[in-house]
Length: 240
Length: 327
Image 1 (cartoon, each protein chain N blue to C red):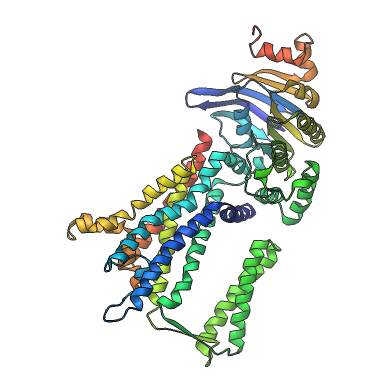
Image 2: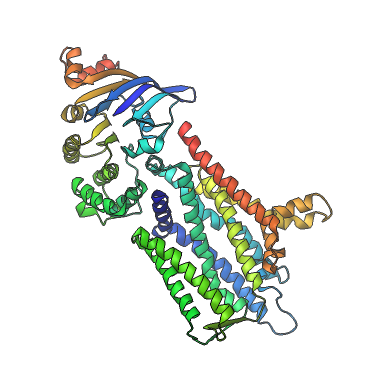
């Protein structure tokens, strides 16, 4: 579903992503790991079409994100980091607007709106103004926005950042359920989350892919150690 | 197209869910109300003094009483500030809060984003000026006589107007798309043909409106206002796409807008036969209004300026959004 070949991105002189290649198969839930500044967000922004790569090729659902951006974006549900929303709209209005922006017809949008409100547990707050919601609810609105057009691919940038433990558990449960219907790429810092929700994992360090494979395979390659140890070893901070 | 439509709706509604729209409306209505008050005073003054072009007073083009001149300078000096309030939030705010990322990753082209935002702010601007239409009956000395003549043509006109209004309601409340399309084609068509036939064929009119003062300067003034406004709005939109802060966007668009206003007040400094004078005149919007639009003259030169600057700014705004992706 997602194919990335030799992706490179320079910010001026600084290479944020260097020659990254990976593929995500249909139906997989992939954890995208890496320390801060490793290039996770940059890669995801390129996948979602917010940034243009300096070099390389990215296709999502068979559509090139550079040459066929509209078709590619139609098959992606993207949730940006820290989940920015229009704070002056009501939850329902916001999702209705986003559905329209993604080109859903009226009737379809109505059913999808009902579905995502139910799915992301937003029924109680649907008339509330987004600006008055807590962080956890906002995150859910962002997730509902990503889901509204029923895209085959979900790209979620740190979906559990800044949530309290209960909310993290809820979000994780939701993520597992969504993983059965959608191909998912989610970035995170929390390693236990990857173990709980993902089939496979891509670890990125200093703009390069350091490890790529299913959870079991990655663990095996590093002597069956916990993922945490593998991560620390790969990102070169062992001695600390 | 559906995406553009929803973006226009959201951007327009956003003026009323935040303080921005009300601030702009307040500033604008205080200024125009002040000028209307002055015009009214001059129109009803006793003695040999009076007002030749009432619209000139409303658009701040009077020189003679000092209060009118001060009010005129105030109006034009603050005009780019008002359009700046309308436009500064459009892109700068989204960049500041990060919602631009969500917007630009939706399946919508950059030019559609820019077009939708421009249409929304222009609609708000038109609404602002539409409120000043209440001054027109006084300024053009309109008198109405209602005959309520019911003829086939007048009924056609009335039905057409009702359908036209319904089409707008349908747009706002998202009725069925085909119904909306049918209403918005049928309504204007009926209203226009009915109105034309009623005006030319029928003996007794439904309503007769007589203007005591030549009403044509009113039309040319509003034409000028719409096109000049489009220019200032497009300029503000461009500036808004450069920066992250709404305040900086507002100040920059005020400064850039003043480039098209201040030359009007420098005209005394230059000999009217010099080369500088026509060049300055070409970019001084208040002068265009004082000399042409408010006196019923349609000069195409300023119109070309307004339209070309508008288009150029919109094009540059699209490019500026595109450049963000490449950074």
